[in-house]
Image (cartoon, rainbow, N blue to C red; front, side, top):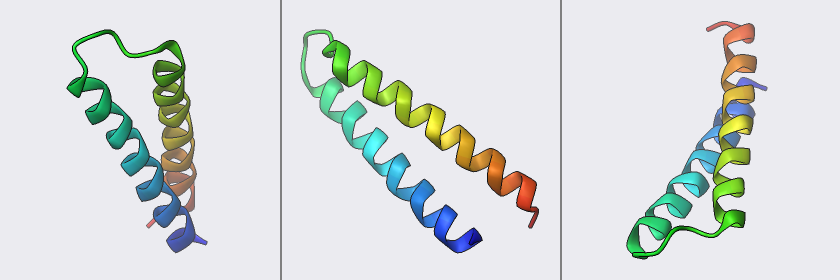
Length: 57
């Protein structure tokens, strides 16, 4: 299970990074939906990191 969670974590981080880089390329403020998506990804990333911590190493 740990491997699957770590793979999911990397996919979520990658998606969040892609959104942030795309937002940085535009001189205007990012759309509300982009900001919400980034925030939602951050919550999911944190949840998976906590789950991995609970599983131990």
